[in-house]
Image 1 (cartoon, one colour):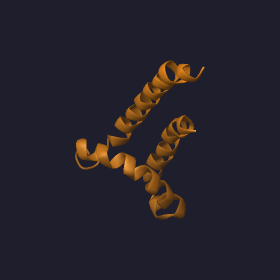
Image 2 (cartoon, rainbow, N blue to C red):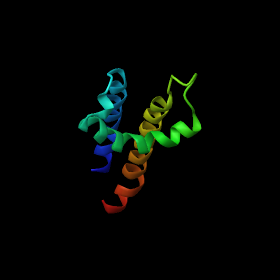
Image 3 (cartoon, rainbow, N blue to C red):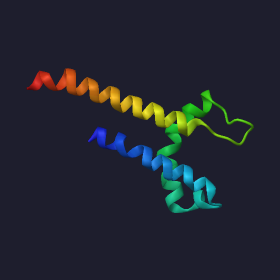
Length: 87
């Protein structure tokens, strides 16, 4: 179940990023829902990497890579070290 969430979260994040291209999209019910999910993940990355020129936010790109690396790392640990203990 946990890996399923990590597999689909980048798509949710991508939709959230695309919403920035449409004025007022963040103020909709769907936009607020996505903000509650995505902003806690993006906030630490925004502290580390501030927007370039105050406009270009690179934190979602770093978040994509971090989520992918975490997913691959956790899958490797589970499939190679944890599951063999139960088989």
